[in-house]
Amino acid sequence: MANTIDWGQGAVNNTNNWGKGKTNATNNWGAIYDSTAAGETNITGSGGVAPFVNEYSMSFDGVDEYLTMGNTLDFTNTDAFSISCWFKRTRSGVSEFLISKQDSTSNSRGYTLLIPFDDNKVTVVIRNNTASSGRLIVDCTTAITDTNWHHIVMTYDGSSNVNGVNLYLDGNNDTGVTSGTLSATISNTASFQVGAKNGASQFSGNIDEVSIFNSELSASDVTAIYNNGAPADLTSLSPISWWRMGDAATWNGSVWTLIDQGSGGNNATSVNMEEADRVTDVP
Image (cartoon, rainbow, N blue to C red; front, side, top):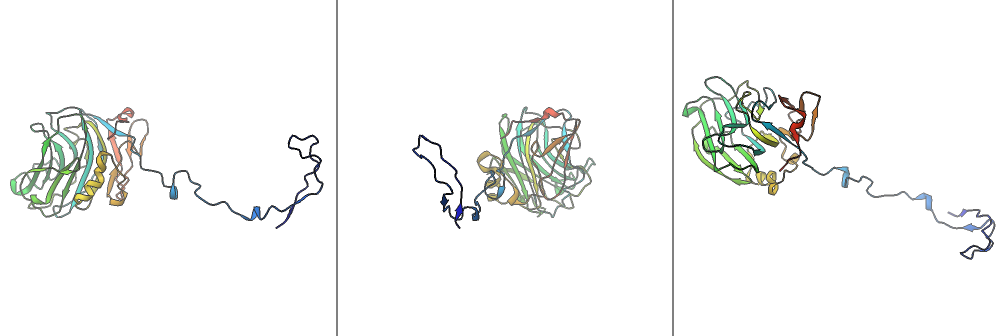
């Protein structure tokens, strides 16, 4: 396509030596306006997907602070499930609960992930009653008495047998002492809580990236979650619940709400926590 452009009269004594410009000059520019610019226009990268970033964890005082999700994630003894979280202790020699959904009756039906005061080894308890024929107890071989970040994953295959439980600490299978069997359902109406059990035995320190799966994670899944010591995007593993702690959290002036990034829609609500409890200390 030929475009006619009237340049008018060029400047006299132009430093470019144009002299007197030609009137009604005809210039063939080509089809400059028939082209459409192509290429990536979103600065976040291909497809406009923002990179995964972990900026915040939640800090717990070990006195009265915890998160509650209500009566949800109520598994039975024949359901396979897994729990993953990052934690950083600020004390040892005190029994503390990382994750719990266990009722307060004499049977203590449910499941918990805790650190006992006597040996400081992360332990999982899955229970339909307190007798040895109604509980699975598995602990790690490694005691955690430092104040560093650690990652723990508990997996259960739904067999009601203690051999169906594994504990992975910092990406490695660290399953230690095991005992017991399950003889009935572990289903209960207690609230699922992070940082406490039924509002007691609170955790002191930081917790980050808590996720629950309705399947038994494999060793390779655990490796992917641990990601050489840096939290990773869990979307491809399809967690039923995934609380990113400070990330995807809102403060309304008195309460934190942590949005469930999994498929379950189980948002968390803070109890006795403050706005300053969202911190930038992360693994």
